[in-house]
Image 1 (cartoon, rainbow, N blue to C red):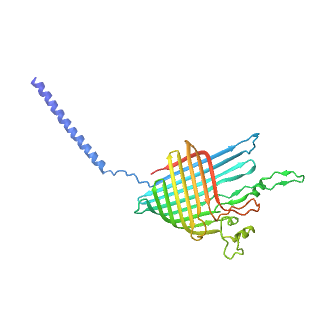
Image 2: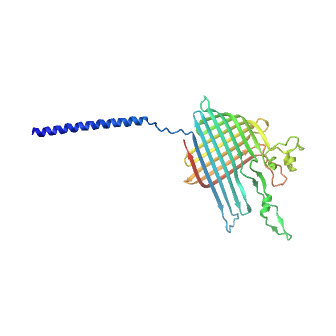
Image 3: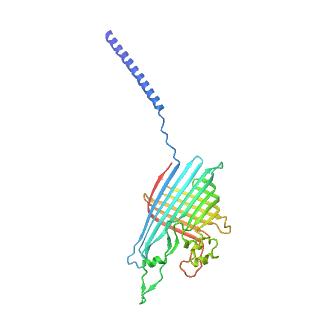
Length: 359
């Protein structure tokens, strides 16, 4: 019995000794591994200062009539829009950049030509550096606005009759000849560069006041220079711009008008949820060089309502008041040229897709 007890005791002591050695060795190995892990530099994710978003829309509309008693014409419309933004924020420096591209056309059975009904290029960039005053920053801003292609007022051709007195249906060339040119690429183009202060009291609102704003209005198509208020060239044989335009002396007008003034631009954006948003921008520009002329005003609004994953309803409006722009009497009925508020509105439904990259 004593021999058995001695053998059991010896076995327990040996097992404990081996277990203790293994435990110490395991602990030493773990400590070495932990120490080695501390020597490996941690992977630090690089800071991202940009937030990018691209919103695309393609909208299509169509009307078909067959023996419709109330009358009307078959027609279809197609329009595309890109609204891209790139915003930057780092320490005290912040910037917002936005590019809006719109183009659309319609076809109606009563006019055998494609008619442009939407054409716009607008880019703006605002940069600010925070001041000691809360919500206030020194700012520099730039904006550029024009259109892609020639745009017309589509008038009905004059009625023509054959030898028997029957009305001749206007041809495509007749329709093209009757249209009146209204604008084109860089005709006009508005460019502004301003320095001032940027006030952002809330994430959804900003007000940029640039008391030192230099700008230019460019009209590259000579026959449109009178319409957009271009001055006569020095030494012109004409003293009246209306007379020069009436006599088609388009080469007597300047191609550009330089401006120096103050600009106020207010932006507001409400995002109700991921599917509904409203943005608005009001801009006023006063030209120091023409103190008796009223300020130029533009007001843009856009409501975006995403109804399904890839379909949305968009309502947009553009209002312009430019006291130098003349709305020509293209009907040639003897009435005088007029000035006033220009307004455009679009209600569209179609395919939408958004690409975004957040910080």
